[in-house]
Each structure stands twice: as structure tokens, then as C-alpha cells.
Image 1 (cartoon, rainbow, N blue to C red):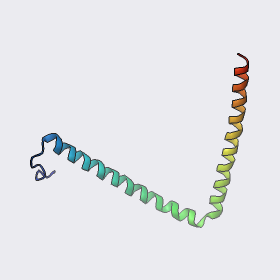
Image 2: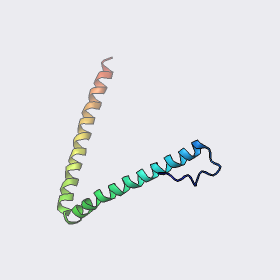
Image 3: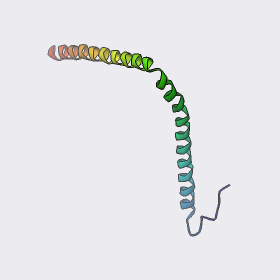
Image 4: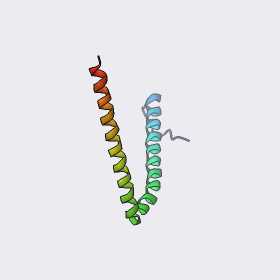
Length: 85
């Protein structure tokens, strides 16, 4: 399964470390390849659905405004709690 030709003067833990590092790098490459495959349809979808992207952007902006409003209300409640001490 694994080549022992790289062993040379290496200690067993060095050989194990090399194989582990190689496996981790291969796993990372595979994950990046998988992510790239998943991004291709997204690129195609956003290329022709500019109106949809604008709608999504407006929706996200609306969520941001709502979050800011709730945060402001909570900061007021916190101030009221602190003032009641």
C-alpha cells in the first residue's frame, strides 16, 4: 500500500508523519475539488438571474435593517436594566 523506499534513515514516527501529512493534503485537495464542483452551478445561476440576485440582495438588506432595529431595542432594554440598579 505505502512505499517503503522513502524510509532511508527515517525513524518510524517520521515515516508515519510523512504519510499522515500526505493523506491530509490529499484530503484537502479532494475537499477543494468538491467545493469547486459545487460552485459551478452557482456561478451559472447568478450569471443569468441578475434580477433574482438583486431581490436576494434586497432581502438580505431587509434582514440587516431588522437586526439593527432589534439590536437597538435590546440596547435600550439593557440601558433600562442598568438604570434600575
